[in-house]
Length: 339
Image (cartoon, rainbow, N blue to C red):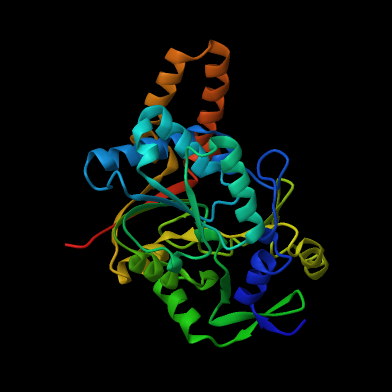
């Protein structure tokens, strides 16, 4: 295996021919980690309520596009559609539903799942990249996408090079160094690809809102956050001195998820540079409450058996409780409206 920069190594780990995301993976109790989507359908329900509010406010056309980027199983968008059907069924026949998914195997899984769930009632269109989609008006949603962009590793002026699975900080990379200085990092992860992604979305559509959920903070962490998730075990990428990091990485490579905390200031700057307006960054807990998750639960309480309500309430609590997903995960929102 030749020497390469870390973003190439991480890209192969996640997206290579045999990479972690290239094939179907379970998420949730039987997988490597939980997401908001695997926790409760009311995550998608809150987004559905928000989409309807955008239509009512006149920002999103009833003929607009609802697009999920990196949908994995397709469960999230399916939950959104299910709640749109419950709250405003007429919109199902007018809105256009799109998934951006690069992997054929996952596209096939999503198509089968939607066919089993909705039959001919919902038309789903797939594209392999945002650049293939051209529309006038859209709502874009992505869950945990920015932590899955490959990154470079930076330490005191030097950028990491990977030989096999061994990491050495001995490269000079001016772009990485400039980003590290901009976000006041003397060590940590520098994401690669935010700028291209923002430009691509900006050129796709003249009027849109984009919302994403991820873990991280506006400012950069003062240290490395890179870690691996395997069967709900969190394994630091840089292990302690008495463990052989190289052997551990070789065992985990492409078989488990590798991720890091998002520096949302970097995401914000990338979109603003592409001409897209930053709206807000807030805790997932606050975002979901503002979008109406409590009202949706109240509707369920009025229309379902007490046992079902109690079960769904416990799941939804995990989305908004500060000690689970509510505080650590953030919602970032952008808007573009050509005058």
